[in-house]
Image 1 (cartoon, helix red, strand yellow):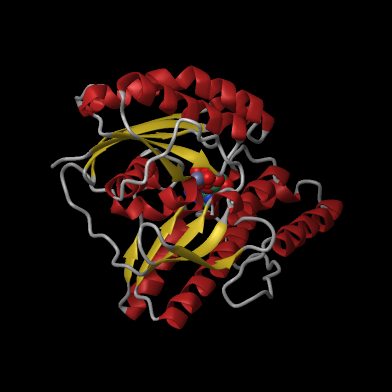
Image 2 (cartoon, protein in one colour; image 1 turned 45 degrees about the vertical axis):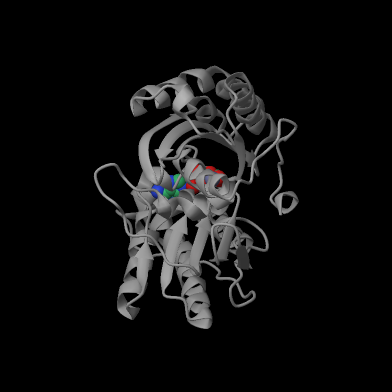
Length: 341
Ligand code: KG4
Ligand code: ZN
């Protein structure tokens, strides 16, 4: 029997809805919020308000694009956390209202599990290859940087994590001091292609074998800018591409070396990446190369399924639906990851 799931994602600054039938994506709608650009970061209050404006048209469009009506939906999967509480509240409340009105079961999804399970989404015109369990997932988003050993859709173990900043956060902060627009990750990605990766050298962390740290790198980046700007006020302007290339190369190297070490340690040959930074072209090609050299399989989700999206929430929700793990109408958003475990 076919199972149709409506996924709703509203954890940060993207309002998204998607429909999957079994593992096949029927529709995916993402409304990104331009309102934050002028502030150089996400303003929670404005994010909640934009979600409130977007949620009805986004869900409506997802249903229409899929060519179905709400009565054909078997369950509504929503992101319960982690994320901004005000943003999560909009998706959670809307999901509950819709479920109650149409008597549809509700499933709550951990946003990070969504990113990790994104490689299981199939396209309508082609079935994609999926990782076998256990696989390793490098989860690199704006708020998290983790290596996760995925035993099953329900059992995941963090084998490495950042002890300070997330990779995306470090890129966004360095971009900000260079005067680049928010979010900085995609801009650095683009500018880095025109620069030399060996132009500057920034600090690399000395932490546990599979752990990450980006605050030392960020500080060494800031000190380089400060010292060079004292000599030449146009330093950033004249060296933007080289700065981006050198910074990105360092970040990617930190991520890739630890992921490869962990894969070797656990003898795991299926490797996936997920989260917004997994959209990065240098990271994607580096991980693909590392895997190819060793005969490992590499799963790089399409770009639109790396940054926040509801397709990954729908697919993660599907697993819970099949296990009959339903949510209740008193489910409230959870801001922090630790509280979701
Ligand atoms: O997963 P995501 O969309 O939201 C969170 O759950 O945090 O990740 C957002 C992060 C931001 O730090 C953004 O700068 C980064 O992903 N990002 C990128 C790229 N696209 C998004 N970083 C590097 N290169 C990209 N192409
Ligand atoms: Zn995310």
